Length: 387
Image (cartoon, rainbow, N blue to C red; front, top):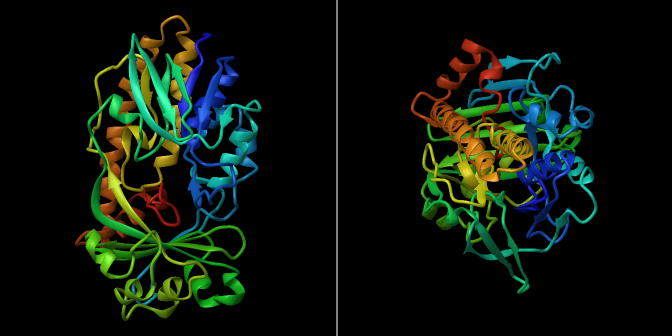
């Protein structure tokens, strides 16, 4: 296949696609709005699953590099009551199928695996339009443009490519996360570090929860969940991406101080992360010359599957194009039909998981998942990650 592939977005899905295409000798260019790989922090921990994320990395020829990134012990899982009592605990014995790595490190090995110049940094998309005959033009903020006969939107929740295929737009789920960090916690915040343990920690109640994950060393990465309308966060002082800790912590009045310290003692300003989703079972009719991967195609609530699905999408699309070098439309159609099925299944599971986490039976619904099927059934529930 000689047709260059134009990929919008240098997240894990777009980079995996570019890498698999490179393995098969297919040229690709990745256009990314960020100015450089270090333009912003890349998020926290990812649990990379045996059935999707790991096969994608094998297809990319990067499995051994991935294994070298795994942080031992981070699959440990515990659930606490609001008073700090341990309700469930499972250690990481090294045999689980969801090893944990830092998102930024995974992105680093993907970037390093691509030929120099594959990623074009500082290219923010401002418009995309159809030219006819399966060709599309992408315009960037600097006034430049590129025309392509094979366009892939790997540009996340607010994709600029998606409108070529679908009128769907993400909708607020009613729940937001507030993200905080504690650094050097074993020394500076020992009670909170003990509460979180060696891996993921959940402390949940109906409509709210405190979820944290130990990253490298003593770094504790926390997502506080609140089922509140957007106006609540505005009134609480979140007039931009960051806001005050006080109103968020007040929602957990009476909870154990080692838990609320994850909010009140944060070493970073709390960051608001509203949760949006695309419609369940989102799909579209085949449009020549364009498709989507990852959140651009199937944005869902965090469940530990988002990054895994994005990488698997990228790998499967790359494989499909390599297998049908003379018929890209057949390749795109085959990829999409399989992707629609797996993403709908995962979205339904993610919605069910969030109901167990924050619904009326919380925390007992999640504990039942842990004790009924082992921690692996719910280990991707979102602690320390927004995937």
